[in-house]
Image (cartoon, rainbow, N blue to C red):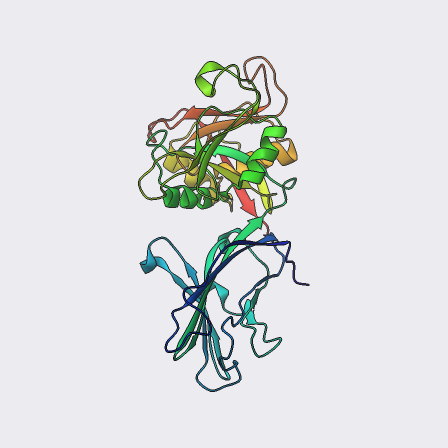
Length: 342
């Protein structure tokens, strides 16, 4: 069943009259669609200019693309001309032209993922008249089925552009968090004084204990925001969102402490992989995993998860503790592994 939770018209610009003589310039319409993660969603697109031939006429072409700020990174989604229809890349077999009537070029995307989030362009091309419509798709994950965590890479804080931030969350078996997910984490007690990218390219951070260095001591608890930032030149940390594990996260018992390379090999020898940061946070938050042993993770960091605060482990709060990014030749730590379900 198609899930179309919200369509909000953002802007409508009709360049020239639909009834003017001669060649009409393209008509532009932008709408916003919000869908649940894993649902089906319809992205609307209809022929706008009156008096133009319908899709049933030979020569009408419909092209859907997923567009980026850099046009060179645009991704083809679907191309339709007459009886010929092709979908492409990650959309192959998941996107279908609605064709409810002769003026409808809407598409349905099945099993929506966080990677599907973004801006889509529908082009209806008919020789003399082109319609160009854009749809912004926002995907909402299950706010209760996952954990939001802050992340910065080994090179230090405030070192990531937006695209790098998106990729680094994926590298940790997570996705970049949405503003709604960060707000839910704030309500759950997350307090973090470093600004990070979110999925809508805003930069925010959650404060539960107001203090002067973190947006001022006179402001109440809440999300502090820098608003939308330039994706290509601004550098911040990131907030990632990890869902429930589809496998087993565990501490690998070893007779000796390990270097990073030895830790990776030890997990492989056990039929697993070295765990990622997203695995540890999901196990800690969603499975109450608790261990007071510092261990290597796949990004070269050393961390340990505490769900029961106690002396010498994390005396004041439940948390994932970060030791840092030590020299990978250092033989001072154990390792956490992850074994995916078969």
